[in-house]
Image (cartoon, rainbow, N blue to C red; front, side, top):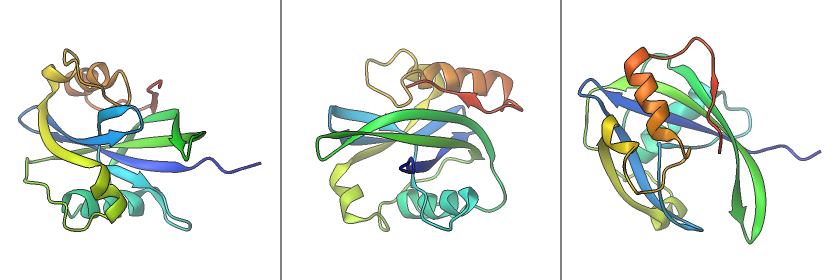
Length: 155
């Protein structure tokens, strides 16, 4: 049985009610995603979260973050549809200017822009987001705080 790749993602929410998202070019056009990436062998989820945030945004995360969501989805690699699992962690923070200095070449080739989105605008935007119901998930998170249970996001 083949291992399912696991990615660790950060839901960076500011005290101003905005979330940091990255616009990337995917196999089906551009999409907005939360910062994060693949977990490396032997790495814990918190270690991956810290490394990915540093690489993708320049943020040095201190302390622990709470896991809030999980997504079981698929992605295309070389024309083949593969399964993946994404774990999302809530990271309250102050807004900062993210940087791409430490991104790998493959990430930079897909990267388009960063944006601090007002949570209220994500749900009504015609843009594509992953997970698809990110706007609803963010509104719930903003209104109620992180759940004690990890929520399945859907595709």
